[in-house]
Length: 147
Image (cartoon, rainbow, N blue to C red; front, top):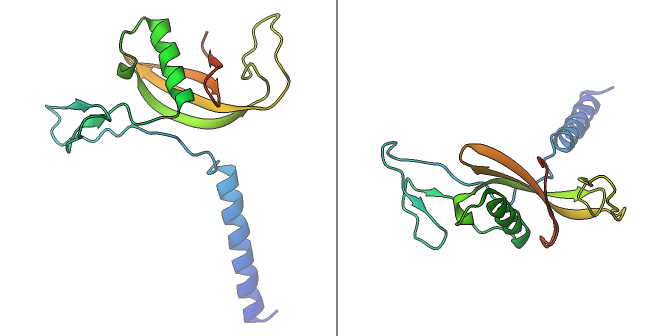
Protein backbone atom coordinates (compact mmCIF):
# COMPACT_ATOMS: atom_id res chain seq x y z
CA UNK A 1 0.00 0.00 0.00
CA UNK A 2 1.31 3.48 -0.83
CA UNK A 3 1.78 6.35 1.61
CA UNK A 4 -1.34 7.96 0.19
CA UNK A 5 -3.34 4.77 0.78
CA UNK A 6 -2.20 4.57 4.42
CA UNK A 7 -3.05 8.24 4.97
CA UNK A 8 -6.51 7.74 3.47
CA UNK A 9 -7.11 4.68 5.66
CA UNK A 10 -6.00 6.60 8.77
CA UNK A 11 -8.44 9.44 7.95
CA UNK A 12 -11.34 7.03 7.48
CA UNK A 13 -10.56 5.27 10.77
CA UNK A 14 -10.38 8.64 12.59
CA UNK A 15 -13.76 9.71 11.22
CA UNK A 16 -15.38 6.40 12.17
CA UNK A 17 -13.93 6.63 15.70
CA UNK A 18 -15.19 10.22 16.09
CA UNK A 19 -18.72 9.21 15.04
CA UNK A 20 -18.70 6.23 17.40
CA UNK A 21 -17.47 8.46 20.25
CA UNK A 22 -20.25 11.04 19.74
CA UNK A 23 -22.94 8.36 19.52
CA UNK A 24 -21.59 6.49 22.55
CA UNK A 25 -21.35 9.60 24.77
CA UNK A 26 -24.91 10.65 23.94
CA UNK A 27 -23.92 13.95 22.37
CA UNK A 28 -27.39 14.03 20.75
CA UNK A 29 -29.10 14.67 24.12
CA UNK A 30 -29.16 18.45 24.44
CA UNK A 31 -30.02 20.03 27.78
CA UNK A 32 -32.82 22.55 27.58
CA UNK A 33 -31.43 24.76 30.32
CA UNK A 34 -28.53 24.80 32.68
CA UNK A 35 -28.48 27.56 35.29
CA UNK A 36 -25.27 29.48 35.59
CA UNK A 37 -23.53 29.84 38.92
CA UNK A 38 -20.78 32.37 38.41
CA UNK A 39 -20.02 34.67 41.30
CA UNK A 40 -17.60 37.55 41.33
CA UNK A 41 -17.61 38.00 45.10
CA UNK A 42 -18.29 34.90 47.22
CA UNK A 43 -19.54 37.02 50.12
CA UNK A 44 -22.41 38.57 48.16
CA UNK A 45 -24.58 36.68 45.72
CA UNK A 46 -27.53 38.30 43.98
CA UNK A 47 -30.42 36.10 42.93
CA UNK A 48 -32.31 37.44 39.93
CA UNK A 49 -35.10 36.22 37.70
CA UNK A 50 -35.32 36.29 33.93
CA UNK A 51 -37.58 39.34 34.27
CA UNK A 52 -34.77 41.28 35.95
CA UNK A 53 -31.61 42.59 34.34
CA UNK A 54 -28.88 40.23 35.51
CA UNK A 55 -25.67 41.84 36.69
CA UNK A 56 -22.22 40.24 36.61
CA UNK A 57 -21.86 37.77 39.46
CA UNK A 58 -25.58 37.04 39.75
CA UNK A 59 -27.19 33.61 39.73
CA UNK A 60 -30.08 33.14 37.31
CA UNK A 61 -32.48 30.46 38.54
CA UNK A 62 -35.44 30.79 36.24
CA UNK A 63 -34.21 30.85 32.68
CA UNK A 64 -37.05 30.39 30.18
CA UNK A 65 -38.02 26.71 29.94
CA UNK A 66 -40.61 24.78 27.92
CA UNK A 67 -44.10 24.59 29.49
CA UNK A 68 -43.63 20.86 30.22
CA UNK A 69 -40.51 21.57 32.29
CA UNK A 70 -42.34 24.33 34.15
CA UNK A 71 -45.18 21.85 34.81
CA UNK A 72 -42.66 19.51 36.49
CA UNK A 73 -41.45 22.37 38.69
CA UNK A 74 -45.05 23.27 39.59
CA UNK A 75 -45.81 19.63 40.48
CA UNK A 76 -42.80 19.53 42.80
CA UNK A 77 -43.86 22.84 44.37
CA UNK A 78 -47.28 21.36 45.17
CA UNK A 79 -45.68 18.20 46.55
CA UNK A 80 -43.32 20.18 48.82
CA UNK A 81 -45.95 22.83 49.67
CA UNK A 82 -43.74 25.60 48.25
CA UNK A 83 -45.51 28.92 47.67
CA UNK A 84 -43.16 30.20 44.96
CA UNK A 85 -42.17 27.51 42.41
CA UNK A 86 -39.37 29.79 41.14
CA UNK A 87 -37.41 28.93 44.31
CA UNK A 88 -36.99 25.41 42.90
CA UNK A 89 -33.87 25.30 40.73
CA UNK A 90 -34.03 23.38 37.45
CA UNK A 91 -30.64 21.69 37.10
CA UNK A 92 -31.26 19.87 33.81
CA UNK A 93 -34.08 19.16 31.41
CA UNK A 94 -33.30 16.54 28.78
CA UNK A 95 -35.59 15.59 25.91
CA UNK A 96 -36.45 11.89 26.25
CA UNK A 97 -38.68 9.24 24.74
CA UNK A 98 -40.57 7.04 27.20
CA UNK A 99 -41.72 3.49 26.46
CA UNK A 100 -45.37 4.14 27.32
CA UNK A 101 -47.93 6.81 28.20
CA UNK A 102 -47.05 6.39 31.90
CA UNK A 103 -43.55 7.66 31.08
CA UNK A 104 -42.05 4.31 32.11
CA UNK A 105 -43.33 4.79 35.68
CA UNK A 106 -46.55 2.80 35.75
CA UNK A 107 -48.15 1.96 39.09
CA UNK A 108 -49.47 -1.46 40.04
CA UNK A 109 -52.74 -2.17 38.21
CA UNK A 110 -52.48 0.93 36.03
CA UNK A 111 -53.11 0.63 32.29
CA UNK A 112 -50.70 2.55 30.09
CA UNK A 113 -50.83 2.95 26.32
CA UNK A 114 -47.85 1.09 24.85
CA UNK A 115 -46.68 3.90 22.60
CA UNK A 116 -43.47 5.88 22.51
CA UNK A 117 -44.15 9.11 24.40
CA UNK A 118 -41.84 12.09 23.92
CA UNK A 119 -41.14 14.42 26.81
CA UNK A 120 -38.54 15.56 29.31
CA UNK A 121 -36.50 14.21 32.20
CA UNK A 122 -36.20 17.14 34.62
CA UNK A 123 -33.75 17.25 37.53
CA UNK A 124 -34.56 19.92 40.12
CA UNK A 125 -33.04 21.10 43.40
CA UNK A 126 -34.80 22.36 46.50
CA UNK A 127 -33.14 22.78 49.91
CA UNK A 128 -30.16 20.65 48.88
CA UNK A 129 -32.28 17.70 47.71
CA UNK A 130 -32.44 16.65 44.05
CA UNK A 131 -35.73 15.50 42.53
CA UNK A 132 -36.19 13.84 39.14
CA UNK A 133 -39.48 14.19 37.28
CA UNK A 134 -40.67 12.97 33.90
CA UNK A 135 -43.15 14.72 31.62
CA UNK A 136 -44.72 14.30 28.24
CA UNK A 137 -44.08 16.99 25.60
CA UNK A 138 -46.89 19.35 26.63
CA UNK A 139 -46.66 18.76 30.39
CA UNK A 140 -50.12 17.22 30.79
CA UNK A 141 -48.52 14.10 32.28
CA UNK A 142 -45.99 14.64 35.07
CA UNK A 143 -44.52 11.86 37.24
CA UNK A 144 -41.88 11.71 39.92
CA UNK A 145 -39.20 9.04 39.70
CA UNK A 146 -38.82 8.92 43.49
CA UNK A 147 -42.44 8.42 44.61
